[in-house]
Image (cartoon, rainbow, N blue to C red; front, side, top):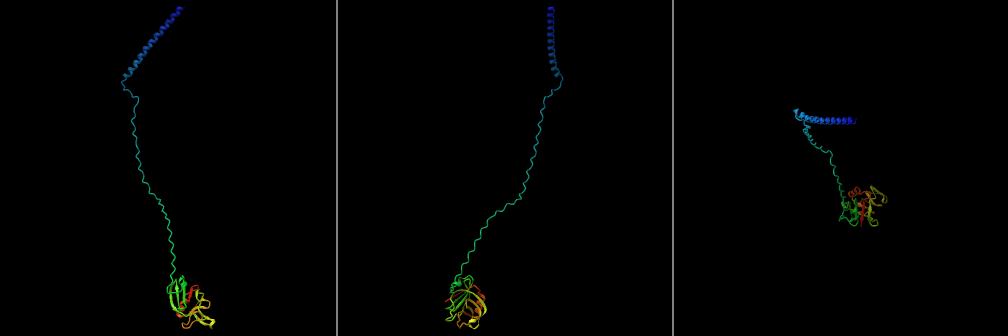
Length: 219
């Protein structure tokens, strides 16, 4: 019995070895034949990869830069501060007329009258300048002296009637002191304090002098 088992095992082993040898030979033939079959086909070998031709890069044409639109914003004008105008210089006071003895009348900016009792002369001035005269005049007689000093025209009457002297007419009266005035009168007879003038001179004084104007009487 043992012999049978040993013999069967040996037979089996021999069969296995025979099978392995034949398989190896077949495998070799298959491998070799595969290589020949590949060559016998006559086809040129297919490249495993084709290098793609480089795609040319198309550079986009540069868009020309558009001309900048002209600016419509006007430049703001530069503001310059105007220089202040120089203040006008005050007009110098007129110098006294050397031929007129009345400093106050000459210094007046407006119309003024000057009377020189001793010289029996009188003037009209405008802004310190003589505009009329000298003209002759007669002052008050003794006991009725004409007042001296600086006065102002108080009132005017075309024909004043003196109640003190029987309503004696006093044409073109220009009063510069209460009761005393320039008026038409005799140039040969002294007055009772007024300033006698010719008819033409009294009219000039009446039309030129106004209430408030300076009247200066010097001795």
